[in-house]
Image (cartoon, rainbow, N blue to C red; front, side, top):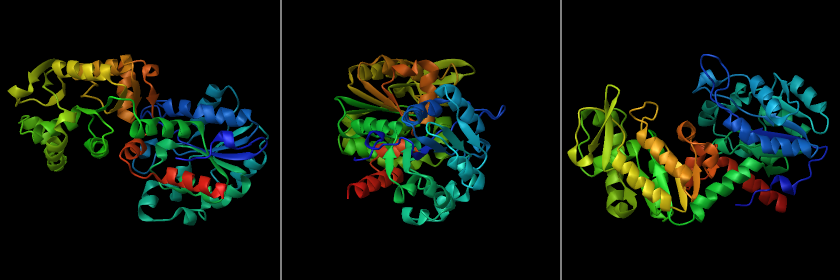
Length: 415
């Protein structure tokens, strides 16, 4: 994948529009940022641009119509960036209007300005993207691009976590400005390409969590093309696989699946077990809770009258051995309901195994990272992706609008 990088452009005394993804969870009670992971990940590109003498103008989104409580101002983001960078970061409560344009025109080399949350523009919310189908070329005439592009010398994108979105801020500036990928974007693509295209062997995928559509999307590719030597299933993915084998989980766990329409994955699970059963691991024991007390049950002794909340100790131990011997480990989703003491045992054990593994580990997804942070030092993980939906789509072999736009820009600049 060819993308122009920061090392390919001279930004000294140039005005650079930098699109980052610093969309962060917001504490409902305090209204403040609850996790600064994406802010931290954005620092190298911002710092490199400012140190190189660029006039850095940052645009970013926060929240959306679907998570309105997160749709807040970026003022706190600017304050946190300034503290982390050790240099001033200006902020203006405007996106692309007269005030923003005046502030941009007044920047000096090395200065940084964060504009207000671009999601206050209709053209940048997900509902607009879903209803109004515009090409990247058509988006070049949107309010945001029309007003900001004439003030810029370069456009730099560092927002891999939003790579699956098809919005003007992500795919349209490439149509009208010289373009480069930021440090994080290049790191994300490099790390995930390594997993998808040339992983160290054996390559193990540990898939769990509640979002079974993500797990099945990735499994469809990594099993069929041989990327994964082994897939270890936990969470709802494991329960679906067990049901596909004819296991009766018990009424509560079965209802949990059918009430959400997840039984639709059963035919696919049956097919994959027939075709790839030697590479798909399912639990041999599971856990449930009675009150606050954890109990474990062998799969052979199911069903049980309680909701299954975790893999059992025997399963965790078997999976730990596979992880220990792996050269590449990719993880998406916790093994169980890790928020409670009764449900955390499997997730804790597997994260400790991943952190201790000598192999290269790659993880991603909001709940995945949150569960890892709970049990291990995240610095022990080889690569922590900022992507959720973008990561899943990348590893599923789907095209991502942002990466398509970046490659198109690189091709144009070579002509």
